[in-house]
Image 1 (cartoon, rainbow, N blue to C red):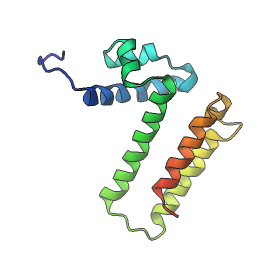
Image 2 (spheres, rainbow, N blue to C red):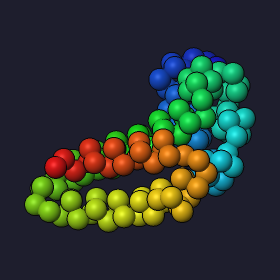
Image 3 (tube, rainbow, N blue to C red):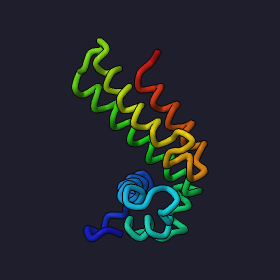
Image 4 (tube, helix red, strand yellow):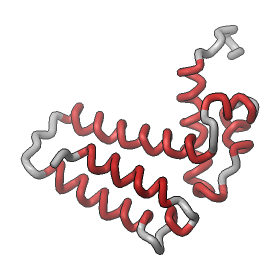
Length: 129
């Protein structure tokens, strides 16, 4: 229960866990972050975290997806026309992301080729062909 006596819904708790996870993953990376640390930061038990996200990888992928949704929403809210500017910005973001997920990069070096593939797919969805 929260201080107001209101019990959080699972969807609200899920968002709280994602907010906690982004801080933990940013500080320690995928391999260095424990689900125990994420659960502690979110104020929940580790078993409850695993009810929301069955694996650490599932948690990380949900966080990646959330970030891409936020970027897409920001583009839409800004009303940026599809005249090449968005594609250029996303292309530059993609270059940065690819630096992280290429074979000698941070994510792939930690055995996360599935994560790399997921990031590539989401990046492709931001700018349709």
